[in-house]
Length: 280
Image 1 (spheres, rainbow, N blue to C red):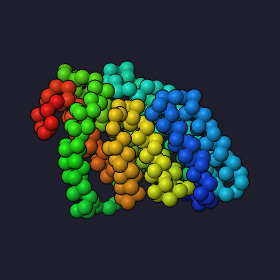
Image 2 (cartoon, rainbow, N blue to C red):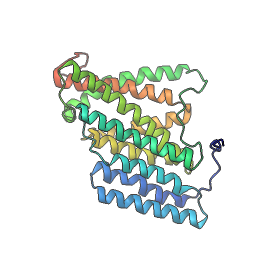
Image 3 (spheres, rainbow, N blue to C red):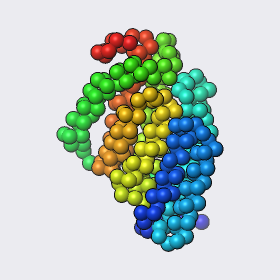
Image 4 (cartoon, helix red, strand yellow):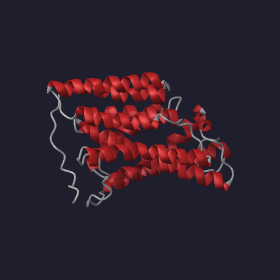
């Protein structure tokens, strides 16, 4: 007996009232990761899902509850561990398992329980990058080199990451920063943003995913006035993905930025590599 393939994504009914449950579910991230109030966060998730059920039951929306449930499940899984930057081997294993499940579980439910192809990871689009896209990569790298040292050093948030001096520690920091950066795009863009975009205009879905994205980054260590950087970054990443439809491109953008983040953290702790304008 052969297993039937997942069906194509069906059309859904949408209505502005659906924003209420979506704001509750995505706003839960502020409580879970921003203020670290799990009971409040879980309460908002439950309230959002109940509101989504009522919206679907009224006939004004369809499949809002199943899709918001996937967003809620991902957040709930992430909330089971501290996001404090820690590059010890046990912590790296914990991050790998928990964050991996936060992407894998919604994907499996969507693909094999809902039998839909909403969550995808489009590595290859068949389109060559144009000149603007290549120039943007250069701009992102330069902007990171110019802005990130000022943010990390003057705010002192570099201390939210461990001091690394030994080659093994530096290697683990590099792997950790880039692994989390990769995961960011798999979860916030290819999962949360895509699920929300099914029900809301791109700009609304982008704002909603940015709430979750920025809240996660806050607990991870991007605090102080970090949201002045992380909010536009999250919005631009979502917007870029909606234009390019390419996970590869937004991932390259993110990893270029994270390469500068890694270098700045090491520089702020050790004074190496001396490639930035601001003294540590």
